[in-house]
Length: 384
Ligand SMILES: Cc1cc2nc3c(=O)[nH]c(=O)nc-3n(C[C@H](O)[C@H](O)[C@H](O)COP(=O)(O)OP(=O)(O)OC[C@H]3O[C@@H](n4cnc5c(N)ncnc54)[C@H](O)[C@@H]3O)c2cc1C
Image (tube, rainbow, N blue to C red; front, side, top):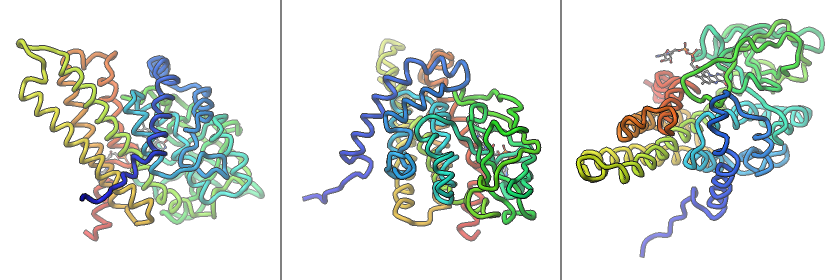
């Protein structure tokens, strides 16, 4: 008799979460997604509806207004969002708080939970995380935006770029220099967007993620209460680094889920489309292409899920999470490319879903840490 195996990604509770997510995407997202992709942002009302459905707060504790659950629940939801036809931009724009809130949930005080965290998880406000600067993003320890203490306030000066949801944000967690050079002089501070001196310099147009707004932000003598500091002074780099594992695993999930969606779409097309008197899928070359797409997707999914389970179990997986991101992104790039090939001319048209996934996936090898930087991080963790 074989050993009983319970798939943690397919428990009754997580099957119910998949069902809930599919229902939400079908009812609340698919009817309007093309329009949001065209106008370049999501409506706040979608955040309210996602909160009401219990999806916005997945992975956040109920004490701060979340729906509970852990990273695995978040991954299950992301898989299902994309595999039901939502876009990478939808995931990044609707769940930007997934990168903006965790530092505060871990290190913030009760006042911050009430003023900042709860309204976002209730879908009434939008939060962003601003680390990257026009001079560079890979080298986080070199960031230059400054925050000087002045009585009960900090005065923030500098600029940030490529900030997801930055056009719509009600408040932004900003990486600032409060001490000397290097990683030990960085703090995180919340700057509300109605602070005098806070400017959305431009809305940035980009290759993919069209329904997720992206901003360049400027801070000119922005005065914010010292109570907006997240965690201890000069602990910002550690806080950022601690959340990178989850951010990278989330991007890996987005990547392999997009690959799975493109594989499903390509297979459906290959069964329906005929050339030379038979369906595409009856041509051995196409069949083998589909098998390779399936292999790449499954390897990425299996590896990423395994690393996520180890992270939830408390193991240190800094290098593995970086490599899971690289593995899944490379799979998604290959699979989305091949999906367009199987669709032929139709795959190149902007009204075809695979075309959108192909563009969306291009961002993933840069956002959340470039592939080369991930590999270098793994090299250092391996003692090379
Ligand atoms: C759509 C989108 C959304 C984003 N959202 C956010 C956000 O919400 N908040 C935020 O703070 N940032 C955000 N970013 C920024 C993102 O994190 C940075 O783009 C990324 O960290 C790379 O920084 P950079 O663009 O400044 O590239 P650079 O640091 O200038 O690097 C450029 C390229 O050089 C190579 N490279 C860099 N360093 C090395 C090295 N050590 N070894 C080998 N090669 C190297 C890599 O190929 C890299 O892509 C977003 C980016 C995009 C595209």
